[in-house]
Amino acid sequence: MLRFFVSVETRIAFVLAATLACAGCVPAGAPLVATRLHPCASSEGPTDGYCGGLEVFEDRAAGTGRRIRLAIVVLPSVSSDVHADPLFFLAGGPGQAAAQMASLVQPMFRKVQRTRDIVLVDQRGTGKSNGLNCRAGGDSLRDLTEPDDHAIENLKRCLAHLPGDPRAALASARAVVWPPAARAVHALRRRGLEALLRMPPAQVPAFFEVFFGLPEHHRWAYLTGRDDLGATVAAMNALFGHAGWGLRGRLVGPALRPGLRENAPASRS
Image 1: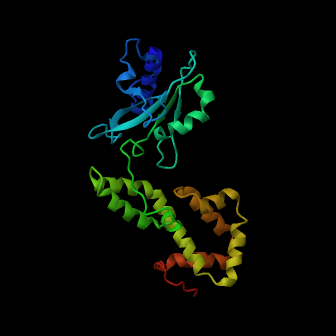
Image 2: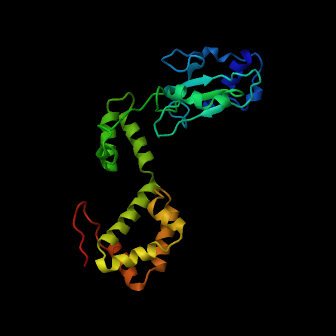
Image 3: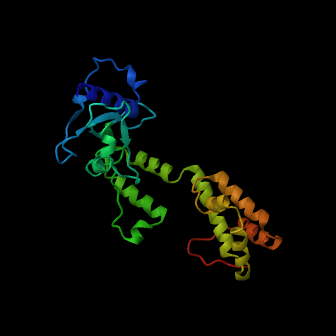
């Protein structure tokens, strides 16, 4: 059991705090992780696991300032022949908390747990790791598909009631939701949509005929690549290159006109 405690501390420190260069460089007399982990209560996770946390800087890049605690659950191997590398489980979502899912994860990874420790970590801002719980008013389709601007305003109101500087948190949220590349792609797509809305109905089929004739990677980038500016520009160039001269004029014209106001009818002149 002593070897298990040392190996878990080494890996947690390596992956989450980057304080050790390698797992093998921890001496036999290193402090036990028992100071950070304890047998889980039934309310924390599987009772045969170990629960605890690791303090890290809230601003990882700065390496100074406020600290937050990352919640951790360790499911020790049930074998005496434990492999040196544990399995780290990080939930997706985004916003899901891995440590809180330990009781659900354990049955699915019983085979892995025979020879490896399993480490589950609530990533910062999720679960018990200083959770940022700003939810919409409900789970209706309207709530789940609200415009980005509305989501930002709802987030702003939520952040105002959380500890810390809400302005800094809002700026960080905006940077995540709308990085510069995503803003540029959004602007290009908006112009493309305006061109389609202003296009005479008789020319719309020609547009889609050209579009669906593009290679799959261009179609994917045009519709899906939210922050891939290079791929979006390449897709638009390909569309323009395959279009006839009349369709090209309909694609370029709207770019030279003022943008449409929200919910304003499009003029097809």
